[in-house]
Image 1 (cartoon, one colour):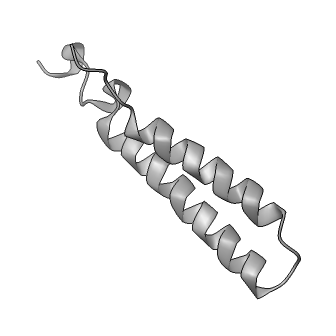
Image 2 (cartoon, rainbow, N blue to C red):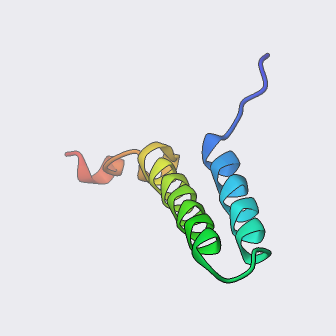
Length: 65
């Protein structure tokens, strides 16, 4: 059986890593750009999770009747 991957967790890990890297930069335009990229990765992970997680798979059974 193939190993199941979780892209939203991978995206979250990338976002956290990008944020940690950005915090290590000196203040200035380079740090600002790195923080923006980290925020974009975080937003992508949240969007992916909302679209594809089982918790958000649609209406519950009792609401479909």
